[in-house]
Image (cartoon, rainbow, N blue to C red; front, side, top):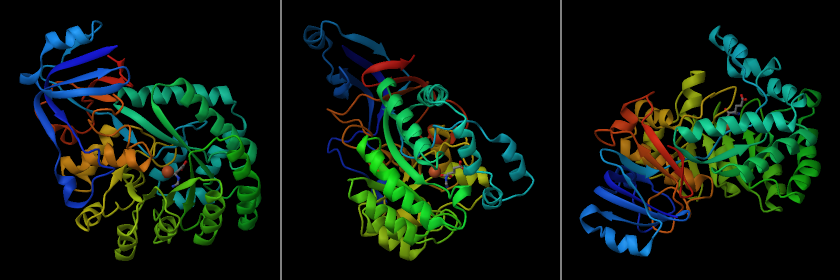
Length: 419
Ligand code: NIG
Ligand code: FE
């Protein structure tokens, strides 16, 4: 079925060249078209242009089933690409959050067996169906806020059976949700209690047992390691990424959230698709990233929620790097998948211009999860994953109007899923 969206106040993030990502000074330019139309057919964007160039009688003849939607006053842009989440989890952790309010740090909570280990304990008692249903509900919520593609990690299992359980749930979500999903195996998210003091043995388990089974069932698109102070070392990370490479799993790693951990460099060494968090990024890290095809991915929701320092986004962009932003939706450090808020934090906390922030949550996010050829820009032939905004005065309003929902309708793969 073909759908014509006409009288679009402004069509945002057009890219005829279908660039893989946008970096440095180019991030401050956003290509748009005022008073525009956009045509989809099946699951694809097939045409767009100026209203004055639209010949509706020709279109009607070509598409007898054409549905026409009048977008007057509203803007259209690509749906958000959220390249880093942990949205399959057994339960929220608001009680632990009270400890945070009282002053305990993320690391102190983790050391007491809270944090990720708390989720891992609950994971044991949670069935695949329960996990699936709660995650499907969360997917519905983020779609309604404009997300059209999402990466989801395992990492609350921390033993072979539970890690596989999580990844099977993600596969079932892929099969049944209209949103585009990529899955990442994160066995190396925390050291389980029974391996305390025997970290290398847990890394052995990941390499010798988990990875082969994940690969045999083809359960993951990517591999992740939490390479940071108090979690996995550069040496652990090196071993895991080296093993994963043999199964063709490209890394997307957690790095430099808590310290200058060396995570960025080891990620680049293994040609990671992305390195994520990056609160501790200095000149050496920027240099390593400049010589790579790795997308620096910032998670301002975690800095906001935990009260951590923010990654030096301005410095990274000014050095010529691309930057993506993602929600990090998880029960411990960022219990929200609202990418509209992430867009606002990009401007509020990182001092990114609206244009830069929009690139960071669309095409650069798409690259960071390996879907840039099909999503992330308004380009003919790409999938029609679109946001139709409420009536808004300008696109600068999107980051500015923080905490408010600016999304009216969402189209995924050519179908209105929120209307
Ligand atoms: O990305 N940094 C490590 N992992 C998650 C937190 C997960 C949790 O606390 O449950 C993150 O912030
Ligand atoms: Fe994370």
